[in-house]
Image (cartoon, rainbow, N blue to C red; front, side):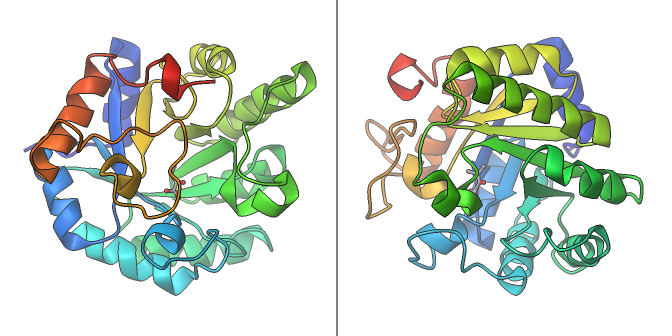
Length: 265
Ligand code: KIV
């Protein structure tokens, strides 16, 4: 079984093959996703909302992320594992970020770390990538900035905001980022950014033209007790088991059936 690497994802982008991605936070679900053939797992700081019951991702600690990433890694043989750097673990200095990212890789066994933010984080992304730590960027609705954004809102709607996001994407790529998550932005903007960049984009609420798609596992299984976002879809509907729902998600992304216009902006 050939492991999925960053090179695999870049080749998939070049070949026009869609990348499949879901979040996971523990051994059993990670094993199920890995066995179903998912390409990438993001150990998201969404753990704070869907596992810990917080209203936002802000309370999640680096120790939480190391612990959950290690649990996920125990369940995976093939999948590329991306671990979120939680709020306040990467903003203070590139040096501190390097130490914290190192823990996610050394103790958590992550392959890639994910950082929210654009131009302001480019120096830090360069510091990490020049020292051997692969980075996934995250633009658009960046949940750690929820209070600054005034809620979980669609981003990049007007021309100025779209231009800023586009520049941020290029800055992250130039700084060495290997993957870029685009969350809750208009489909047309995500389409343009995905076409302009050489690194793969993974969309969540960013329309059908990203190079891959990700959903939060609890949203796509319809088990999150609070409101799931409009861009999510409950794949348990019409499928008799969790395994069947995950397989249906993978097939729908690969066959470009998900996301539809009703999940996009
Ligand atoms: O925290 C998270 O789960 C994420 C993904 C949805 C991209 O950032």
